[in-house]
Image 1 (cartoon, rainbow, N blue to C red):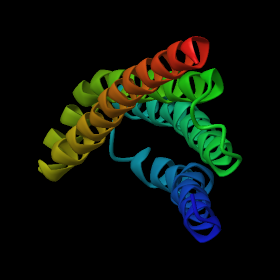
Image 2: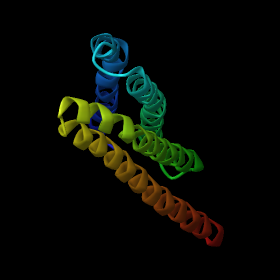
Image 3: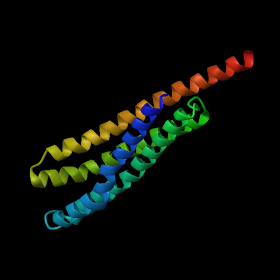
Length: 158
C-alpha cells in the first residue's frame, strides 16, 4: 500500500474517534443534565450507561483497525495478526449492535414521551451499521484466513 493511502486511512480512523470521544466527555453529560428533569431516571440512566458501554468496543475496534493498517503498511497483511485484528473488530461490532438493541426500549420510551420517532430511527441506524460492519469483518476474516492457508500450502510445495 502506498504511504499516502495508509496515512490517509490512519488519519480517518483517528478522526472517527474524535466525535465519539467528544460525545462521551461533553455531549452526554450535557444531555443528562438537561434531560434529568424531563424523563424518568428508569429510562434515562440505563440508556446513558448503554451508550457509554458501547463506546468501549467502539474504541477497541478503532484501535484494531489502526493496528490492521499498521500491519498492511509493514507488508504483514497476510498474517495471523491481521486475522486476530479482524476477529476483534467483528466481536466489537456485534457487541455494539447488541448493546444498542438493548437500548431500544429506553429510546422508545423517551421518544414516545417527546413525540420524536426520529430517535428510534437513529438508534436503529447505529444498531444496523455496527451489525453490517461486524458481518463485513467476519467475511474479511474468513477470506484472509483462507488466503493465508493457501499461501502456506504454496510455500510448502515450492
